[in-house]
Each structure stands twice: as structure tokens, then as C-alpha cells.
Amino acid sequence: MTFLTYFDFSLTEFLLILFIVFIASIIRGFNGFGFSATCISGFSFILPAIQIVPIILILEVFISIFMIPYIWNKIDWNFVFKLLIGIAFGSPIGLYLLKYLSPETTHLSVCLIIIFFSILLMKGYSNKNINNDQSKIFIGVISGTLNGLTTLGGMPVALFLLVTSIQPAVIRGSLAALFFLTDVYAFILSFFVGIVDMTTIYRTLPLILILPIGVFFGNKFFIKSKEELYRKVVFYFLIFISIFGILRILGSI
Image 1 (cartoon, rainbow, N blue to C red):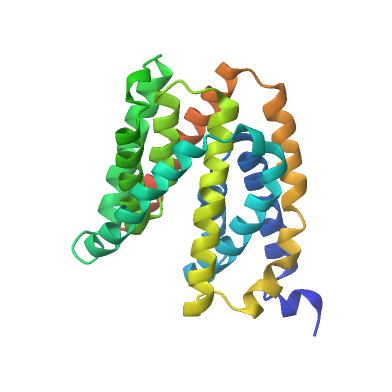
Image 2 (image 1 turned 180 degrees about the horizontal axis):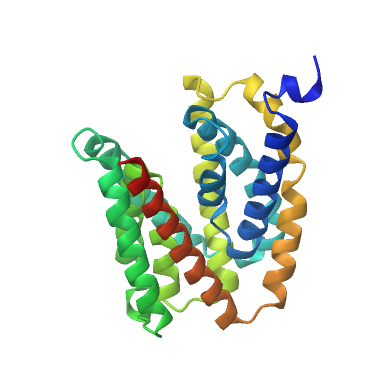
């Protein structure tokens, strides 16, 4: 049995997956989010959907760990915990609505809304007054609901932070901390229900090795960037991922 046979990849597939993970880890190192969205966009052309979620769950936990040294002293813990309260309420709502709403239609609607608000924010709109506990819990509920329905829970959180004009370092740190806590929780649940097993973990190990390298370069780019550039990159990323999501949904209809 060869190395690549054990990991269920051809050489071409393995190199493509490795490249996607590397690019996604650079994006996560720079933005503080976007790893899963980038991986899903790339993996969907290579792997069956049933294999994508377990792999990304494992990679998300490890990339969150690799982010810690870069963001630890830039985390707004009040924001993170208020969001978690909202997410705890919103996630069951999203899973419940999944029985009655089409995930594709909801996904399409969310992508269009993300594009609209990203363009609005790029024009200079901001509102510092919404940076309060009630707003944080509310956006957490929205995030949890959308995550249960479409796995797009991180995008509205990123938009919310950009609206408040919080410093980019705090935005990135708070997003990374939030995803670390939610990723660990999701990983534990997935392990116990059988979505993730030891075989999946072993097969993901080669991909884990590239994560700290990508995060390192992403952090380097972040340090060298100015606040205006950071916000533009995040806006363009949100718009690109949303457009890609719309095209993918329309292509499957």
C-alpha cells in the first residue's frame, strides 16, 4: 500500500488539496476567518461532499491552535462570549428551520445580502453605536441560525465587526478566538457521533503540516497591511466567496 493509496488521494488530487489548504491557511492567517469557505469552494471540485466536512472540521481545530500565538493579546473576550451566547440559541433554531426551509434558497439569499452589505461598507458606511451587548448577542443568534442552515455563520460576524469600526487586529483576534471555541466544540460532537474518526484524523495529518506555514505568511501580510487595505481585502473576499456560492448553487439547480 502506497502513501497516497492509504490517504485515498491520487498524486494530482493530493497536490491540489494541499495547495487549496495552503491558500486557505494564508487567508485565515490574514483575515482571522475564511478557511472553511475557501476549502469548501476548492474541495467541492475534488472530493465528494461526505468527505469534505470531516476533513475541514479537523483542519479548523488545528489552524485555530496555530493562530493563537499571533492573536492572543488582541482578543475582545466580551465580544466573543456574548456572541457564543447568541450562537448557543441560534444553532438549534437553524437546525430546526432546516426541516422547513431549503438550504440552497437560504444560502443564495445570504450570499446576496452579504454582497449588498459588503458593497455598502466599502462605500464608507459604519455605525459605532451598534457595538453593544444586545447587538453582539443578536448577531450571535443570526450567526448560529445561519450556521445551522447553511454553514455561513462566520460571514455575518465579520460584517458586524467591520461595521463597528473596531481595529483590524481586534477583529482578526476575536474572530480567530471565536472560531477556535466553536471548532473545538463541533469537533468533539462530531467525534462522538461518528462524523470524525481516527482514520479521518490520520488521513488529514499531511494537510495539517502545511497549516502553520500558511498562517505564518498570512500573519506577515497582515502586519504589513494598513487598516484600509485589511478592510478592502475582507470585503473583496466576502464578495468573491458569495458570488462563488451563488454560481455553485445555480449550477446545481
